[in-house]
Length: 412
Image 1 (cartoon, rainbow, N blue to C red):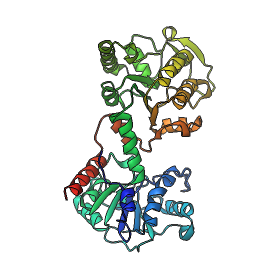
Image 2 (cartoon, rainbow, N blue to C red):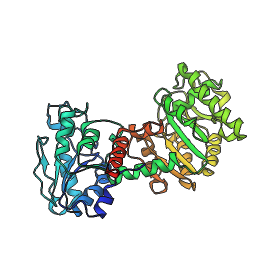
Image 3 (tube, one colour):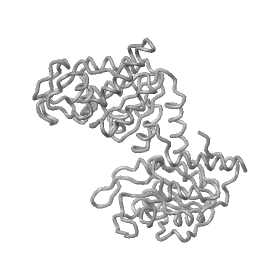
Image 4 (cartoon, rainbow, N blue to C red):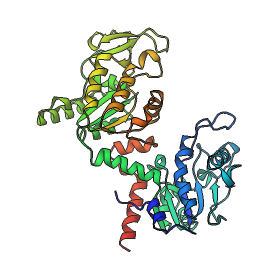
């Protein structure tokens, strides 16, 4: 994917003295008092901000926070806590907090070498619908627009898409560029075999992803409630486990597509692996007694809460032979100690594999953190919905407009 990269502009000396507008993702979790409880997204945005400041730009940064009502400011919608934390992380002149600017659409005062944080962009009327008049105003604010918020890349909003249409230069920040590179390596030009793990509670939320991956991957592993629906499609009893019986036909179609490719290529490993053993309980609770059973022995009052150890080890061996691994979702209720073995074994296998791995999704990131394998994953995606849409084969709006602007620039 050919986009202009902000790091290249900096290296070429084209940023000094320029007004740089950075769309970051600073949408961090807060407690009831408004205190930030986890600041990973702020930390992830620092390289782009520092790059711009070091290059001598006049730097403006904005982000959304929560789900505010456009045009109706409330204190809990403010980026003030983010401004304080960002300042603490940057230190120096900003140690007491980055200046926060409200009502900024019609103009921002910022000098080269200085940084301001622009108040919650979703307070601006027309932001979510990408109002053209708003987008044009945003484009006038800057000389260079930098998109560095992959988590918003699947939305065509005024600060993610519209401004990119009208800013003199539109480019990808280091965080977004890293996502582009990782996605390209994992999906566009993967080292084979390409293995995808798709897990979660419902097939319905990931059906189109499963259908798309079934056409491209060499191994499709399903887990969680999704696996239960596939077990139903395979004719197995799943008791009272979470599943979607109405989508058994769709699950079977995915299985048949993978089986057909398996037969055509003479590789039995391509078929969707159905668990041969599972971990069951009678109730959904952390202290519920766990029982390992053959998948054919599940009773009507059983809840399947994890894959069994035999299945986990078989899948682990397949993952260790992979060339590329895409991981979205834990394969069991890993939050409960009695039902975490499957996810832990899978996580460790990915960590130990020589494959390039890319992982995304909130629950997946939580599992990675729980098992301490952050340094052994090839790339950890910061986008939830955006990551899923990439897996689905969709072209993200942010990628489309940045690629188009790069083409326009190349053509003069």
